[in-house]
Image (cartoon, rainbow, N blue to C red; front, side):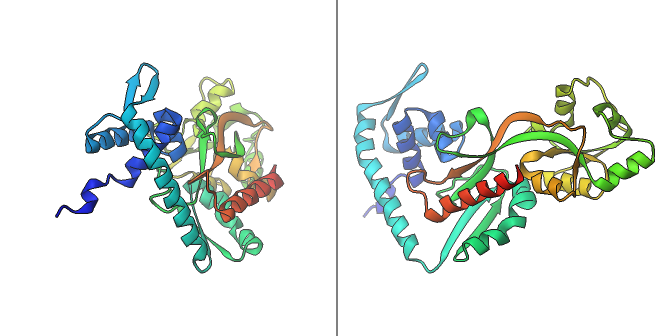
Length: 309
C-alpha cells in the first residue's frame, strides 16, 4: 500500500502557490513570505513537477492561473486557512506565551536586548525568544511570529509595519573627541576625518553599501580622503563598540544609535544626518492572523523609538 505522504506536496510549496495565485505575482508572494523571488519560482516549478501539470501561464510581464491552477487554489486556500486556525487555537491553549522574533545582529545587540527588561515589566506573561541573523528565514516553518528587518523602502512588503527610517552620521566617543581637540586634530568638518582612524564594517559582497564610508563621503561631496588608519569589523555592533571605546570614528546608524547619543556614550559629528532610502520594518509571519502579543510587541518598539526621536 503506497504511503499516504507520497501523494502530498510539501507545505512550503502549497504556501508559495497560494500566495502567488492570490497576488498573481511571484515577486509579491516572495515579499509576503519573506523569501526571494527565485525561491518562490522554484517552489512553484517543483509543485508543478510533483503534480505533473502547469498551474500558471507565464506571460510577458504577467502571471495567469491555468484552469487547473484555479481549481487547485479553491481547495488549497481553505485548507491552509484551517491549518492556521487550528494552530492558533492550539497555541492559545499552551501554558504561558512565547513570542519568537527574528532580527538582525546589530538591531538585537545594540537596540533590542538592552530594552527587553522594559518589555518584561510591561508584559510579564509573555516571554520573548530572539533569533539574530542576517539571513532570510521561512518564518512559518521556523515557528517565528515576527521579523524586524531593515529593508529598502521600495521593497518593503505591503503588510510590513514601518518602525524607523535610516539616517547616517559619523560618531565617536566623547573622550575621543576631547583627545582629538587636545592633540590639535579637531573634528569640525568632514575633511578632518583624514587625520583619524575610520572604523569600517567589512562588506566584501557589497551587501550593506549604505553603511560604507565611501558612500557617505561621496554623498558629502568629498571625492578622495585618505585617513591615517582603518579598522574593519565583521559585524556592525563591533564597529559601534569600537567607537564607544575610543578606537576611532564610526559611521553611525541613527535608527539604532539614538539612546547611545542621548546617554553621551557616542557623539554625532558635523551636525548633519544623511537620510538613506532604507528603514526598519516589522513583518508578521501571517499578516492575516497576527498574535496579539506580536502586535503589542511592535507597538512597544514604536513607542520606544519615538522616545529617542
